[in-house]
Length: 164
Image 1 (cartoon, rainbow, N blue to C red):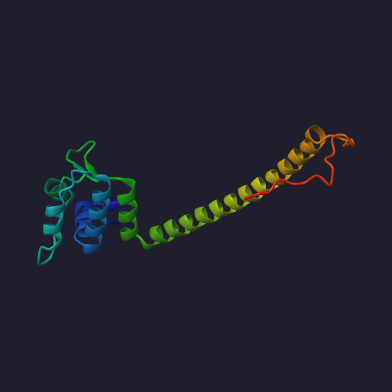
Image 2 (tube, rainbow, N blue to C red):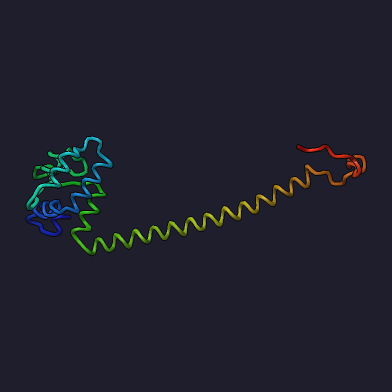
């Protein structure tokens, strides 16, 4: 993605992104959630450094034991790789258009999810209504006798047991 912005100096693009305090906050939060070996003390040291912050992915990984970003050297297979959460954050910083479409897609998916839940709820409600009818009809037909005889009927003048 950085090559999209500047094909010759992609490393500089990534370094500029990593030098913002918003990015550091995001990377630090991501690492704290997913990386039990994250060096929080060094993270706070980096955040509190005065002056212009210049940070590269390699330096970030070395100083904080980060796992969200990987920097590999070499002509073939080398480059800077990141977890998809971090890649989305980088893409959002890199391109306003990317960020806009990411937000729109998220909203579309949440609306679809809500519609699906609504349909599912209505289906469950309808099934419950049908099952209720089936159960009550079965009780009427099989448990309650069709005709209550006079012998099986309790007398109306029978004394009732006191309840406490």
